[in-house]
Image (cartoon, rainbow over all chains, first blue to last red; front, top):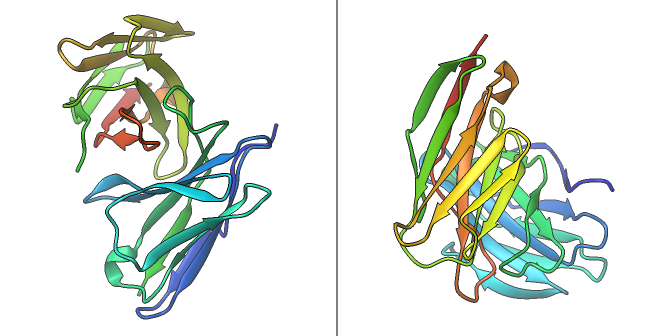
Length: 114
Length: 111
């Protein structure tokens, strides 16, 4: 099976702009989660979707939003970008997203905000 | 906030030696997973151990879990230069669907 794919791999934006990142899960996986990784804060959970429903959300401002489509592909959007949003954004998929399922990560999207 | 805390933060060993990394966490968990990350790239899933398991093996990896001490360890035997990476533990607990990561251990295996 193909792994989790994320597009684009690299992105450069300026403050105030908005950005949309895309994630395609492993075929058959219905749960998609998003994480932000920065040197200072480490890996932090953004949100998780299952069958187009957001089941859990991390402690991020409302500028961070996401959605999941009927084919399980997911997008996350960050509006009004700030310098502190520069990070590696990782997407993970799992079959059910339940507490006993492994999560498999994509290669990430490296976002740089200037 | 981070729940898992890896120890040590950095570890440097010679090829062929064993590497042990520890992870402590604060609240009750359903399972604990270990991941590897090479130089700012994606995370590679290594192993999952459930809260009712005490030890698990996968190839050169051995993971233990002590829920009474809220700690886990990852042992990599006969290390190779290719094992050089950051290693993270991640926990999930309760009815939520998220992983909570520690800050990781940077392992350097010198040839």
